[in-house]
Amino acid sequence: MTAYIRRSALLCGLLLVALLVNAVRVQLVEADERTGAPGDRRPAIARYAQPRGPILVAGRPVTGSRDSHQQLRYERTYTEGPLYAPVTGYSSQFYGNALLEQSADPVLSGTDQALSRWPRWPGTAPRRFPGGRVETTLDPRLQRAAYRGLGGRRGAVAALDPATGRVLALVSTPSYDPGKLSGNGPSVRRTWQRLARDPDRPMLNRALAQTYPPGSTFKVVTAAAALESGRIDDVDAPTDSPEPYTLPGTRTRLANEARGCADASLREAFAWSCNTVFAKLGVDVGLPAMVDTARRFGFNDASLRIPVPVSPSTFDTTMDRPQLALSAIGQYDTRATPLQMAMVAAAVADGGVVQAPHLVDRVATRDGRTVSETGTKISHQAMSPETADRMRELMTEAVEHGTGSRAAIPGATVGGKTGTAQHGRGNSGTPYAWFISWAQPPDTDRPAVAVAVVVEDKAAHRTDISGGGTAAPIARAVMEAALRR
Figure 1: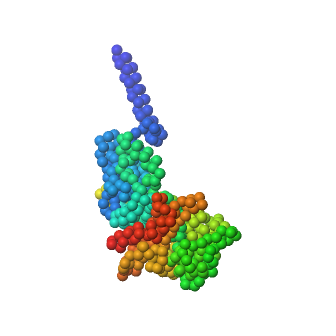
Figure 2: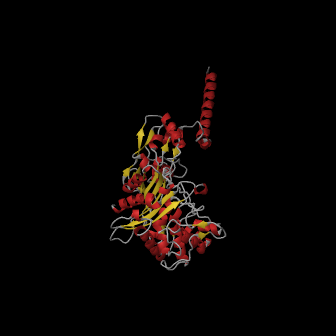
Figure 3: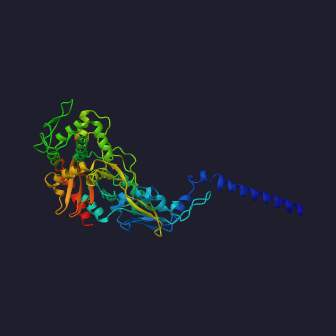
């Protein structure tokens, strides 16, 4: 009998050792391979086992977490979801994360080891901490002014503090409620399918991810290139600019909507947006200098993050002369995001300097301890201070005496540039209405805000679309909100 007991004990011991060896193999040797396998729900369960950290605007959370009492326990909630969706993006248990929810996910989900007060001991597994806080640079007054101004039309607004690069407003319309994409129910899938099929593409961030022909707003860059290269040294001297202007080497004639553009000075041509003057200026300045100036404003930069990735704005580097003439007036294949054109206006406002735009002021732990802060950083020197001063004069007069008059604000100094960008095969599409501007309060020596607005009003008749009539009033509303800060 004792022998049988010994044999049974030995067998049980061997089985126990086998179980331990298998547990070691599964938990250590094959852990990385098994983690993330299609049937492994542990990472998802762990991710949603605690509340997600908040995203804040002006110190107030615009996101939260709701206990669903399900296996994937906490679901994301949004305050004024459509207003802030172009900033927050969504956090969905079905479809992942987007925009700030994605770029700041390690902090918000609590997996960023910087949230710990103590460094992680080498060889130990990463820990999960309470979700951290992400404090944005947005000003809710400017955000609401931009959102109301667009009024549901397809378009976007970007507003910056020229001196710091802080993003004060970032709006894209039509928008959507990201809270409808939280949770596990069938309504989430239905909402996703509806949004994905919507021809207005409400989940597209037009301020950051969509590029447009900038039209005549690009004449700010062309004028700066002409001044920086020495091609223009007197903004009041007549230019040798025929009307109409025949594109070099072609029979194609370029005309103007405004009158009196023949040989107009740079000051007059800028105020009344003379295509012929700026197309010829671009050719006279030449491709290398135009490419260099566009680059210094931020074009052709694929590395821009705010920290959300931004689609690169482009200026072709291999054009012939007729293509260069069209690119100098923001047509051909020149493309820009609204954020990029806000950077152009901010460079004029801030003495020629392009401050790196940023959307996050501070990252902190749940109890408020600072993890990181974003400081002011110069991204590009777009032009000399002297050229910036002359560009400020030109933009101010375009509002006071030219096409941008509907952006004027009594008592404030406002500079602006209108644009009506053609697009589509044979320019058959309804034009995009652009306006870029900056505003300076009275009794101060520097502007408070730089704004870019683009409107895709497909319902309007093409003759009713203009940067001055469609986009400038929206920019004025945003600037007025900034001046009241």
